[in-house]
Picture 1 (tube, rainbow, N blue to C red):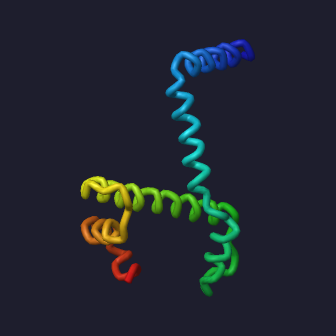
Picture 2: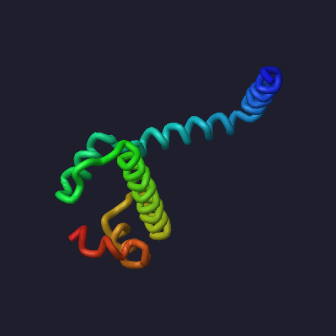
Picture 3: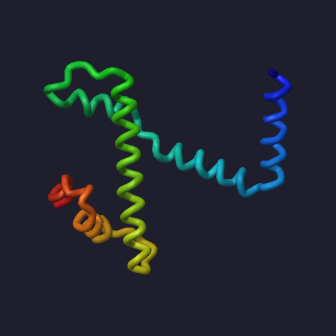
Length: 114
């Protein structure tokens, strides 16, 4: 069994040395993941600020944190896409406003940026 695992590791190492772009992609993905980590203690304190919440389990805090990270990721991706369509390199407030107005999935945010 250990021999199979060693062969898989050797194959993966060989693939990484043959294709340095894969290694670079893995590193950049890890950097992106580190950038998107929200502090769990802050999430928990925000959750407990709701008077209806008396106790928040660690699993719930992690789930809310991950959902928030995914939401921010999608919102920023859409806003950057809007910026690129306008042939600009700087993300501006009007890009966020246009995304919030055009995409139905962001309707619940209407009026929050005013």
